[in-house]
Length: 478
Image (cartoon, rainbow, N blue to C red):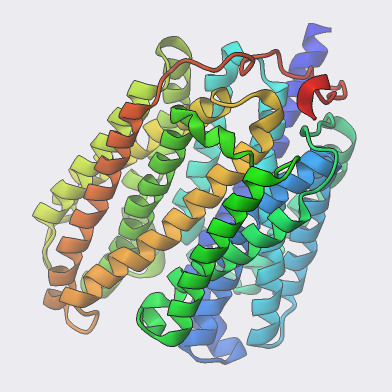
């Protein structure tokens, strides 16, 4: 029986890990293919940007909705549906004959990923005993780190040796294999609400659309332009309306009382700030290697590996240690190390800086980022009761995506105020203050962790649903 349970647990880890890997990979893999896509399908720079932004927008906006749908209709069921949608839209993207067809397919891909991604963590947590949670989440964090690490490499290699279409065809056989395995071998579970909070879902989706669109397009369209101001202000107003509705409705999509828990609030604040500092910096440093130092997309991706690939090695170790001593100190130290690494990079970067001089900052950033993912997921899931873990995962993923979009926008705006891509020296002139802002964001995330605790609330560590057995909704959930 124990061997059967272990095999079932391995299946859950593999299925959720591979599904999350695909969703994260498609966040980045298209970047290096944009010039080739532009030559084949036509379209200006704005349309090419939308092949990336269409995915990011729907992915970030619908993460909480995806988690809520899983809680209401069954997490396994919605996970399979999300996988099917992601796989079909990947095939549609590969078959696109025009840039507008590709943009539409990418938007649907983002919807599928938004359903899949928060449910990977929830399905995993329900299958894992609390005593080994950190180890398993370390593996989960390493897989996510691997997707970030190899995204530019995979995109560049496929474009160089095959064609851009194969970036999307790659997902199709993987999805076809995962769907029947997930449908037959994963256990079903649901959240506490018997009805879907439709007003809350509409409000948070519209609010997310306004905020994320404004963040994505702010630099390109101008932060004071009418469209961007309407988008950002309207999104903010809708967030307030969402909070008011959630406080009053009987079965809220996101119970506001969760934010009374200092750990839940602190973890989410740290997640947003970590993504802001890191993803903005990765975006600019990728451009630095190509624009200033003259490397190709694949060569630039290889040079970033000491940073982006570190989670593959360090994240599982961080997960094991968090099981022994708790997560708070590991996460705070990881964020502080990232801040030091980005600050150090700002000190050494120049037009002709040697790669060896950048290895130290990159390794610090990579180690710090590795110390974040698994322990912070452990803290998040331990800060809420089991019936709220789905929506907690969705909220945390959504905030991290928004943080990433904010990072690219804010660090990009700081860069543009002082620098330019037209001249290597001007590029570095803008890069230095942008890296300092990224460092400040991650250090602020470390400060946010000071308000958290390693202690879980009563009931948060209740035994998870055994693998292969259906979950029941707690009697007091309503």
